[in-house]
Length: 255
Ligand SMILES: Nc1ncnc2c1ncn2[C@@H]1O[C@H](COP(=O)(O)OP(=O)(O)O)[C@@H](O)[C@H]1O
Ligand SMILES: [Mg+2]
Image (cartoon, rainbow, N blue to C red; front, side, top):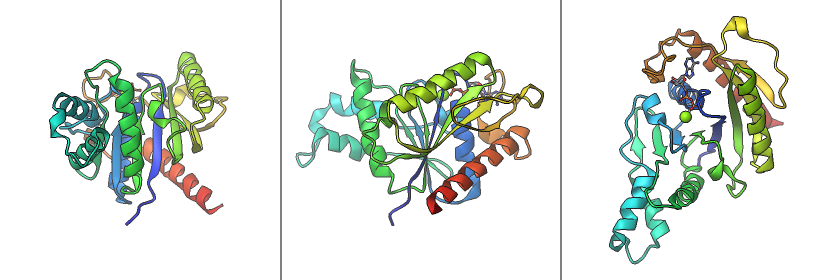
């Protein structure tokens, strides 16, 4: 059956908590049992799998390298690009309650751009196979450019609770619009913001909420969000934010 393929993308500068928020969203969707979930780690410096307690066995960079080094394995009936997409689809990582697509980092120079093109192609195909696609982005938005046919349902810009962080978030907002990335809803989420430090924020997009510092995650020793207890403040806060985002997204469809 063709799926709706709701896309939620997380963006922002490095270190603010993008991958953490993306992982928490995947955790939320899996627990809600509201449909199939594809988690996409589109940041070559990232580790969304680790954050979800899962070690990916495959990534796009590795598949490109492997096929490029041994081009004879491409069947005569397929182009190299088609074979790469086929290989990605048939070796996709299956975790507990969700699938994981990792961009990785191909070895050859100039390959990063190619890997991003491949990611875009397979994402377009996956859209009709999953109910929810959560994309943890790198800063440049290569794969979200306007060539992507389907628009993003919710784009979450993550910031930390500092002046510099919010300045960077504003630049991210501007970049998204300059690149004409298509989205239905765009939000700011202010992460690592304890209750007593929260102030009213002027931002060109809706401030969807604040999330607290979590002592188990702080320090970067263990970033696995599946280890967090359901009663943890951070989990309660993010669950509330995610349900608000999906509520908005539904009312948007009806209007
Ligand atoms: N709310 C939070 N409280 C405490 N630590 C956090 C929180 N969110 C993220 N972190 C930690 O901050 C570091 C950077 O987060 P990460 O999600 O990797 O950022 P990004 O993907 O934006 O580079 C990680 O060690 C992560 O565990
Ligand atoms: Mg990251």
